[in-house]
Image: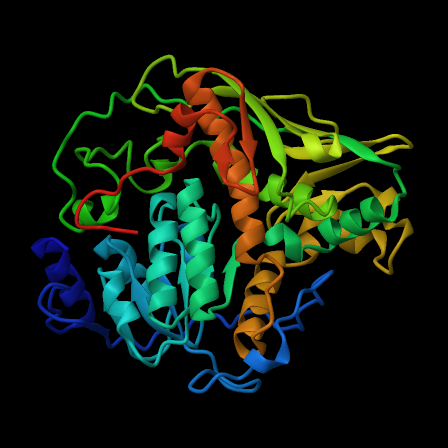
Amino acid sequence: MHANGVQALSARFGRAIPSAEGSRLMINTSKVTRRRILGGAVAAAAFPEVIPSGVLAAPGRPGANDRVVTACIGLGGMGRTHIDANTAALCDVDARRLGEAASLVPGSTCLTTDFRRVLDRKEIDAVFIAAPDHWHALMTVMACEAGKDVYCEKPACRTVREGRTMIDTARRTGRVVQVGSQGRSHPAAEAATRAIRSGLFGEIRRVSMWHPNNWTTSDPGRSEEPPSELDWNMWLGPARWVDYSPARAHFNHRWFTDFGGGFIRDRGAHALSLMNWALENDAYDGEIEVEATGASQPHGCFDVPVSMEVRWRFRARDLTVTWSQPGNPRMAGEWGATYHGDRDQLTVLGGDAACSTEPKALRLGDLHAGSATESDTVDAGERHRRNFLECVRSREVPVMALPAAVQASNLSNIALIAYRLGRPLVYHAGRERFVGDPCADRFLDEPYRSPWVL
């Protein structure tokens, strides 16, 4: 953190706060009380997978009725939604965001700009990671190695190698990892999944997704000094160095291939997750044909394509999935997917914490139309979060387990590789390699900037 940022935070809390380089902690003495999180039981996750009983209740881990002590890494947007009375540490490389989030926590809390200081804390059981996408894999791996369970916001990974390393590390360390594709905790998505799996619409051989175009800008992204409260070097972390510009930082990371990858990685992680769930495609290990085209940015510094058309064909099951930006909405909604069966079709809008589906999906199950078609009747984000915390206690597998999240992210990853290369590819999901294409294989991994190593 820059010196001015530390001074500002110190003034806010009325005491000297050392930098992350000089101390492991920055202490918040604020006593502001946050609104309590909404009550209510967690809905049972559909089609749960449970770890064998022999690995339950590991020594030193919270029991079924114990408090789970958490920390939040990344405090913009989704990061603040995970703060509650059990939050023992907050981390953000932006001192302004760190100070604002500190006021939401009742009692004294560890504040730091270096996430490694959070991982050093022995009393912390689990971490919520809401840093920019290029940090997700490395932070998750390091947290698992430090003995923490992890809730990581989507997308799970930016490269195939990142995803494989995350899965292997979580398994080796025995950590619970949930990824923030909240649609799997939404009653509308559950109803749609049950209906599709029941055969109500017949055999599904085509899924068409639509979404608005990626953002554009006229900002050329000229280099300037980062604000005093922002540690730009730490914000970049493992990504290659680029000078600071407001057009690159925080929310705008989505529009750069080094940090995000556009909506296909962002909301695509939700839509593709629901597709895999509904069609029981989480463990698909065969060949996938992929091709992607798009229109490049007309001006400004963003480098993701403005529009994008992607086609995946899963050879082993004769399934074709398309992603269209902008596409043609089938219902009144900004984005969604239509499942085309040989008897009928079903549209699902959204796929994150806001989701809805057509009433005909409710012919099976016990959900009434209002609870499944109106996105504001249930807090799926809170349901998803509580599913994770319950799994921390029980050691069960969460509803959006890491392997399934990586499977969904890799569909976006190989599409972006096909777009960059400008030609169709064939990817073998089980081998995690392209078929007979060593040139494309080079894009399955990206080097990290020193000193960061995955």
